[in-house]
Image (tube, rainbow, N blue to C red):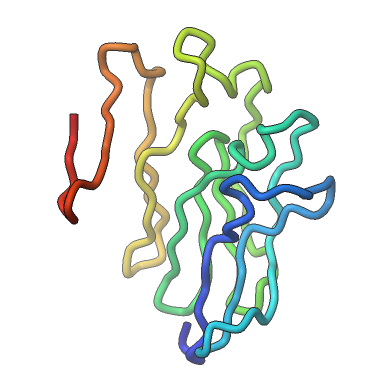
Amino acid sequence: MANGDILLRNPNLDGGRGLKEGDVPLFRVLDSDGKPKREFGQGTFFTRQPYTTGGNRSLMTTDRLGNAYMGFLFQNRISKYSPEGRPVFTANRSLPHDKLINKELGMYTTIISGFDVDAQGRIWAATYTRGWKREEIVHRSWIDGQEQIS
């Protein structure tokens, strides 16, 4: 961040336990030494595990003014926060919770596949027009420091 702080997507959203309704922070701010300073943003609380942690998986970016943006992989939602952590904007089109899981594949249904903000402050999100078919699944792994796609 412009003041030297480090902005991270909250790691608890990747499998942390103990999240409860009204307490699903999206971002974590560390000082330049890596010490936690604060959390902000509010994720969606799903009543069944592991949906709260997995359902809030997201892509994060910032703009030149220091605003933070989050595009949710498995929700039809984009949120913008000021550098101080205040909510500025949310675009949200609700999806039925039964659409969250692709029953054929036994995995979350991906909505957003790419996300960024350009120099003019426009938000860009690459989305899917349909769910994955089993034969289309791409696996990414790292072997000896090299990315492998299959």
